Amino acid sequence: MRKIKFRGKSTITNTWVYGDLYTHSADKASKIVGDGGMTPVNPETVGQYIGIRDKSGAEIYEGDIVSVGFKNVSPDLFYMLGDCSEREEPEIAIVQYDASTAHYMLKGAHETASVLFHYRRAANGDVGHDMAVCFEVVGNIYDNPELMKRE
Image (cartoon, rainbow, N blue to C red; front, side, top):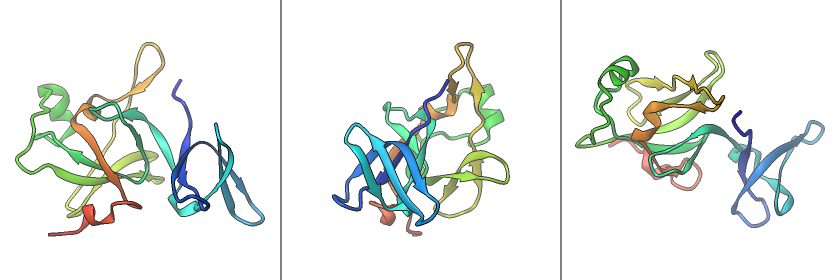
């Protein structure tokens, strides 16, 4: 079973904190409960761990900016060819949750197309994704918004 956890930027230290999410409906306050106790966070920075890691082993969260390094962006072609070759100019995309399809998706800087994560469940119950080995977290939309600027 995948671990459900969140991250958010502390309103006290402006650093990332990780753990369980606590929200209070009356005042809309968000807090992350982790090893350091309960930390108030900016609710606009809260993102959920999507259950997979990039090619370097970094956890991928909503709001992360990833470099997409595979040539064949069609998931069907990827599964058949297993092509994770580096592109000459990798696509840069934001990890977002699409509630209408209940999927995490990648939204490219040029907004030409979205690539949905197609999950599979391994025999041990872990959720994984073969294409994740072609992704590399290069930043996030809160600390590195300049990465998503159109050229």
